[in-house]
Image: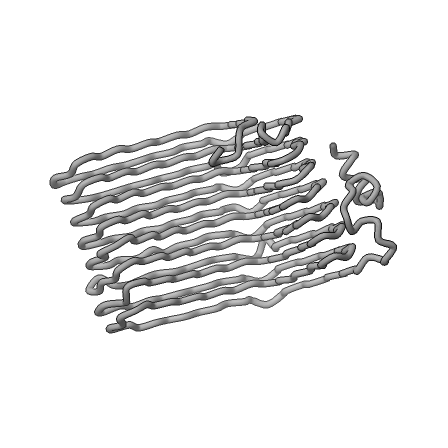
Length: 412
């Protein structure tokens, strides 16, 4: 498989992966991108709300380097190099003393390097390289302070990523090589407190050293991906508290390296080499005096990969090595009076999932190698001090896990 992908990148893409636009004699459009960021990049926002009726929205975004290259009906060749050497920080503060609206939406995002390559009805070859420096820190800090305030529904997302590279393919053929090295500390910290939430309150924190995403429809793709997370720490923390809440969900997700590649088309051929050397920690905590449903979820993983092809063939070759400070997930729910309380913690050294579609006559060819040299620990805590209908906890720790299946598409 690796030899096949290398052949594609060497110039045989049109012959091996046919596409409607691949027979065109038009020379490909080319993009050569070179970005280096030395200084610090930061975005800050503070909102003070006393009384609003409809909604409150806060969106804070900080990126060291960003690029996007797309083509419609033409061949595209992309070469991109990105290096982030300074700190990148996003900080959001929402202070509420009264009613913050029927809906509250807070999005806080910090990214060292961000790239997107897209193709519609064409062919694309891409080589992307992303690097963050060991002296840098990528941090997302988001907090809602409403100990005397109330809201209808609340949705808060706090996210930090060292390197993020995405590929979007529609009726296209692609040969891709993506390399990522993260040396920066990556962390998210925050959450919120409300006196009263009448509807649903969702708080999520996500920290990832390296992230690659491929979304293909009607396409064929060959991918080589290399990820090295050599920082000391990747950490996600989300802490919430309520006087009274109907439905509360608090989540924290931390990953050293992550790849998610899903294609609906004739072929997804992927080789991935993931190596994590960082201490990875996910911690989610929630406290509520009165609650209808309260759930806390913490997920920490050194290397994670999901690859699936619906409609064709999946060829997957994976190498995962997790070593360093260890993987830890902690979920804690504290409630006084309510109905249903749940705490779930999951910690994994290496995780691979591959799937194909049986109804589409799909099939899989899998090669997998996983080595975990780190401690892996998960902890779930549920305390209901007053009265409640149910209390449940799930704690799962796995060194290496691999799941492969061929099944029908959902809904059939």
